[in-house]
Length: 185
Image (cartoon, rainbow, N blue to C red; front, side, top):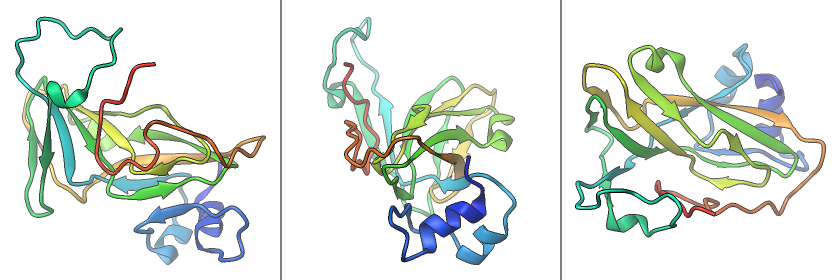
C-alpha cells in the first residue's frame, strides 16, 4: 500500500512516467503532511434512486435498462439530499480519478459516517487503468434521516502497486460522471 507521500509523488511529479490523476486534486502541502495511507474523496452532485414500481421482483439474472426503474437526481452544492432510514441510493464522487496501469485501489466508507448509520459500499476494487468518477452505494441503516451534502468527505481510496502494468484495462464504468446500475454479466 502506498502512503500519502508516495501518492503525492505520483500525483504532483511532472516527470512521473505513470501519473496518478485526481481532479480536482487535494491540497498538495496538506496531503504531503498527512500521515495516512488513503485519499479522501467527496460526494458529487448526481444521485440515482429506485422508483416506486409495479415490478413485483427485480430479476438479477437479467440485465435491464436502469432508467426504467430508477430516477436520476441532481443536487446543487448548497442543497442537501436526504436519505431516509431503510433507503438506498447511488451517488458519485466529486473527484474524477485516473489510475495508471500499475496502481489498483480499494474504496471504503468513512467510519465516522458508518457509526451514524450511513453505509457506503462501493465496488470493492478499482482496476488499474480506470478513469472516471466512482459510483457509491449509500444506504441508511440508522433510525434517523441522514442529510447528504455534495462536497462532503464521503469515502477514502487506498492505492497499491500491482505486479503487472495494465494500461488498457477496461470497465463498463470507465469514464462515468453519473451513477448507474451497470449491466450484469
